[in-house]
Length: 164
Image (tube, rainbow, N blue to C red; front, side, top):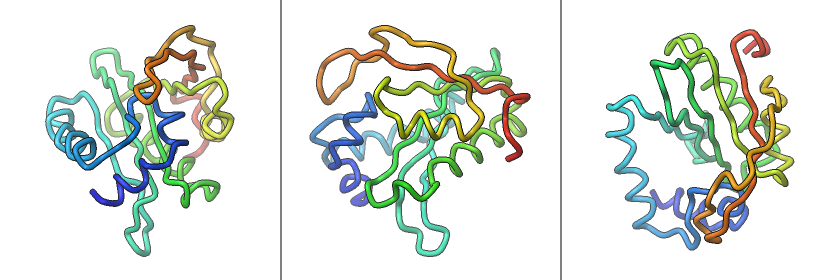
């Protein structure tokens, strides 16, 4: 938990990740961690840590969220700590979770939303085979600012997915 709190002090995470409050404290981390078990048991989401395979150091998180097994679709989200950016960790994690969602959960569509100015996240989506589908006006309320923002929506279906 201390690694999550430390990573989420980065204003870049609060800027691009609508649901992360700023400042981010221990209570926020405890609430987030406590919510994971029920969300997983109810089939609503699965949030996974992105870590170093060698040291276990926390790099960030990747998630399937708003899962609908009836509709066979899910959202995909992720964040990375500042020290972990630019090394391909998000791309690898998104590819792995997409493959798992398609192959093991039987999902047929993944959706990824990103701020219109978050070029790094847009690049991750593109590298993972997601296609830009449009712009959603006033899509999300950003907790750290209390303001609404537009989002770009990207979609991925199994036929789009690059070899994973």
